Image (cartoon, rainbow, N blue to C red; front, side):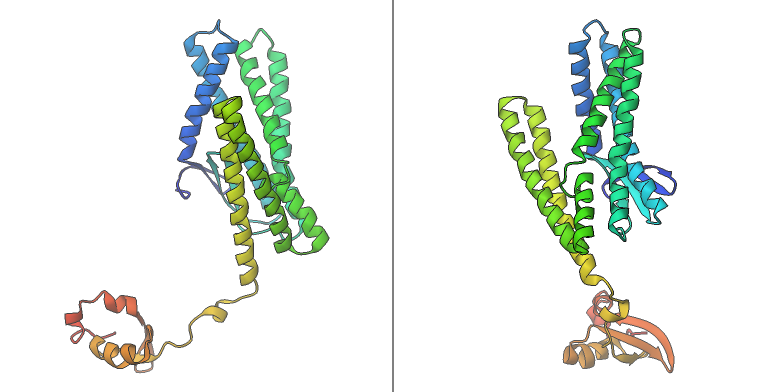
Length: 310
């Protein structure tokens, strides 16, 4: 499992999964494509409409996977770990283990996705052209995939973090300012602004042109806005923890108690008087372990006099 997702397979050590919301979106896109093909090609049978619709949906999500794999393979080539790729309601996310070490690395990873989508658009466009009327169903399938991959490439170049264009924008800001945290805040602010714009136009579109397209646009805006906010928090936390070792935050005030001490005595003489919540347990000069307040609470109070800490 990858969060709220179903794990499918591994590619070069990367877990590939699909979020539960993907199934809902798959059904909606398949229904939309089936309706579209039925309108554009009424001479096809109902079975053909559904078959081409389902095949197109599957290839669409495969295209998104190729987009994310492009990011991931460049990241791996730069020595950055990639934990997983998850396809979900608004596309896909590659979970890269750490932030890039320099702006150029950020740029190269970010641009790889749109390039992959653009190449897919060209490939599907060629298939649609060569298919012609002789292979009408293949041409219809490839034609839609060519246009949607081109839209995916262009949309991802919008300079709103965490879209690919936003990451390219952040790389440029990072290069100019030398400050990743500051660059992230600015790029994420742009992403939030674009998110609000998409929500506004999505609502307007829902009431004036097409409710489904408008709703989809508004949801994308909402997702972009929230993702930008979360990205700022993540980078701020990483910046705050940068350079800290475990010893800098560990507790150093755990008193030493003998293993044969009863829990009742430990509570009465130490916990109630000092407020300490953890104790190092020793037997002579040998370390036995650690006892915490949480572990003590798990023992019934009537047994505290009979149970020792060791």
